[in-house]
Length: 151
Image (cartoon, rainbow, N blue to C red; front, top):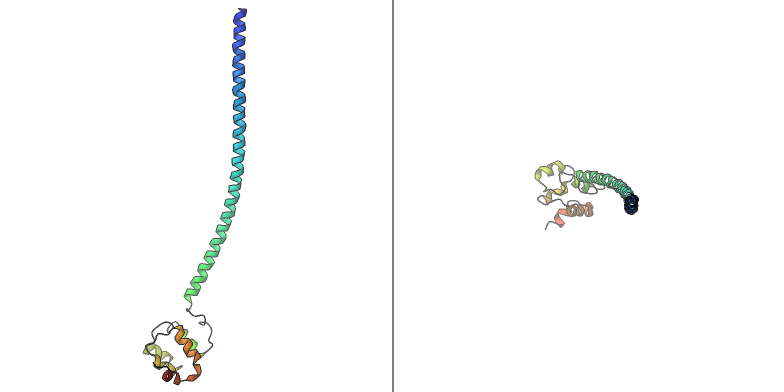
């Protein structure tokens, strides 16, 4: 009986040592897992901060894009020439949407005929920026401009 008790105690001691070793191994794995978890939490926090910054940047860029699109729409809705809102010479009226970059017709000419008789020799010519700059350059030539530059 004593020997049985001794054997039981030895077996229990072996199981306790084995369990103790397993417990130590499990505690080490738990420690490593907690370290990995903390590292992952730190990385997650950095990622969250970067995401917040990226979202703020995206919001800023979206606002800038919207403003740029609005400016572009405004610009497209205006006449294509920089001189469309100011009159610096008689020829600036050629920048009106009815004439600028359009074929000059007799109907369009009739509208402007009372203001500028000099245009009659240019019927059939597309009113481009180059043509209008020509008029501005030779503003003082009067009817001679048509005669001098007919070809």
